Length: 375
Ligand SMILES: *Cc1c(COP(=O)(O)O)cnc(C)c1O
Image 1 (cartoon, rainbow, N blue to C red):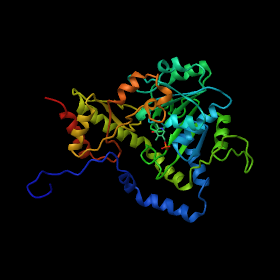
Image 2 (image 1 turned 45 degrees about the vertical axis):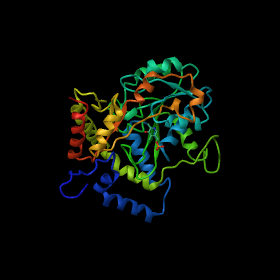
Image 3 (image 1 turned 60 degrees about the horizontal axis):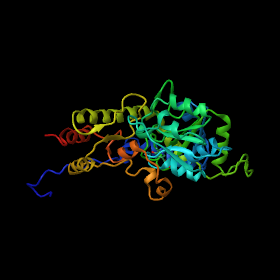
Image 4 (image 1 turned 180 degrees about the vertical axis):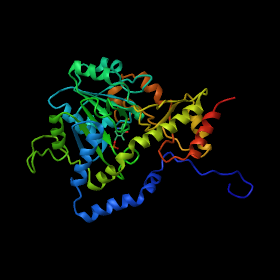
């Protein structure tokens, strides 16, 4: 392949490359970590307290509660909002299974709602038919898109059912009217290394302006303790955000909006290149989209993936199997049909999208998009 006279082999375009973002800021990140290593306070110290305050301020809520992962954040949020309520938790089935895992860990049955054809998120229209008797609803801002949440918030309020926003993919999305995580009863975040606000390990947070709810989550994240060694809340876990991760997040929080804008720029370039062809890139325009993932819809996914792969470009599918068809859960949902969820799961394809993708790499993806399947 590489012998002289052979084809020119371009370097691969990775789906993501976390080392680039770290390299940009390596000395500072290492200095921050070294300070904590030497400092002797590793969990729930000053960095953690400062991050909670800064993140709450950024999102526009009274409280931020740091936890160990996005899944923990979802579980504790569901446990807290659904306390004293019976019934299942309503979730989307197209969002990677996280909310289903979390609701089941919280001891709840799950009831699936279909998603809106345009946003691929839950909407008042898709939730209303399954809302009766629910203990809570979790809506996921899929791929970073935050749809107009007001109709869903209103519907849930009318029925007295609490609403959780899963913002794991939508950190920083929103505008002066409020960011994702402040729009419903409670918001949950993941700081997994590939997310828009990323730690160098696991992390998560719960945001809310409800004092009682915040107290409950704070107790649940640490064994159910009110004060030390006094268990006030049943169902507690150990889910803490450590000092090093909190410090990494503090350093990166001020960059989120700029990086989200770059992600949207990448997606915009793909959308333009795909125009008029058989691949439809889901738009990521304006502040209500974090640009987390560049996802396109195509009835010929295998062929498009192969064309990308032949050009050295990595792609992924988010997500190939809807929750109600997952092997471990399917038997309970045999009669459930979610036409939009099922149909789009066979058409979605994610293209490389991260802030440090180079213009040359973006151009190569665009090249394939503009050629694919055209005469
Ligand atoms: C990543 C993700 C989660 C889970 O976060 P972890 O930190 O990996 O537990 C939950 N929901 C969505 C939508 C995600 O993308």
